[in-house]
Length: 167
Image 1: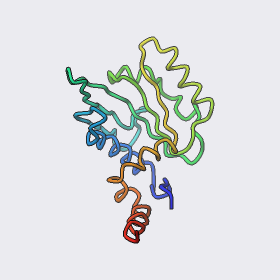
Image 2: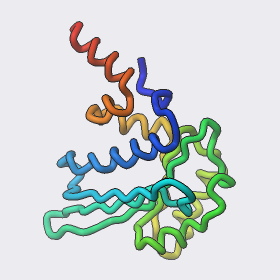
Image 3: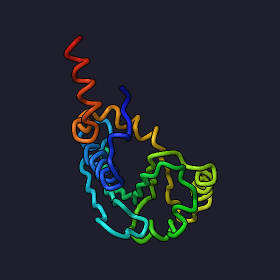
Image 4: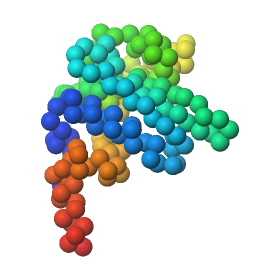
């Protein structure tokens, strides 16, 4: 059995998974993250922001903050620019004082969307960062987050636990 988004019931649970993933980042010392604040937008129209993440990072000299605007797309189909074009992403990032925008998709983005993000990264005069994680990229990150498996992937977790006990 593989780790799969098939156990995630809807977009709200996917958003909760993303939020919990970022909350757990501070537990990994190699990240140099000392604190994580996660603000979810709640139910209803979110204006392009599902989650606002504020990371406190340490470079052994000083702790500094970095904010990311995160949008979650829990769609079976590929994600195209048309699914996010109702918002001006650089303006959204600026309005939150963030360093960048992260789109996390259940499926894959279209080539048009990846080209759009490449253009934003290349041409943004404010030097904001624009990232897109497809479902497989996010699953790879979740695979090592075993503490999230019982909550969000109970069938997978049960299967892995039974295999460990047999060994």
